[in-house]
Figure: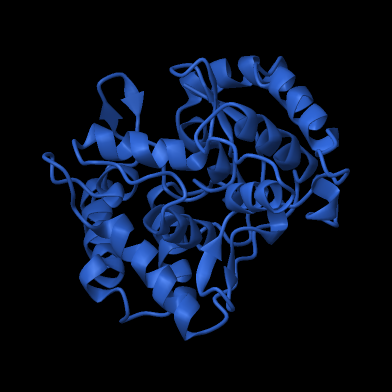
Length: 279
């Protein structure tokens, strides 16, 4: 069997099992195994954690440029700005430590399923809930101050491993909703997330190499050259929706939080490595 034929077979088999119409037919553990097997066979010889580097995992030319950028990261000033925010005292005398008792290195704890509220809680959501609980205004979810704070917290969390749990049937329902979102076609182009980042991973779209989906949850927030600044994961979700000409959801909507829950589970065992730089 040729490599191309093998890729086609892998895509078909994996898509059948993971497709949105069959979201409840497999367990998260089975999904994770299939997901890993798919990418390990599609890109043999690449260590699991390397997939967190996206396109730079599989494209040697762009990897060299990326490594040069990471030698003097453009996001360093944002980490410093985030540290200042972390240490800024609220008007009531509290700080973020009053909400995040373990300190800034919190990525290992997010996203998680809140069984009392029956919802996925992400780190940006928890940051704004901390602020409003202390009488402060919430921050915009896509860029700016929240991205800087996330950069500092993510930097303090580097090396922590992703370990997303699906503790009960309600959490499983949210996970399956995120999974269905990932495989559902949308927009005028009728594309799903999986079309670009599973079926077409490693292929070119104009001058860009499409990144493998494995590890997509590890490196946020991201400094994109296209943006000229840091942005959050949900900002990227919205951008992807717009690229397929679909109306995006609001950042931290239920839809995007459930999608993050699914993607993070698919990165279980990998290390958080944010912030990072991308094109």
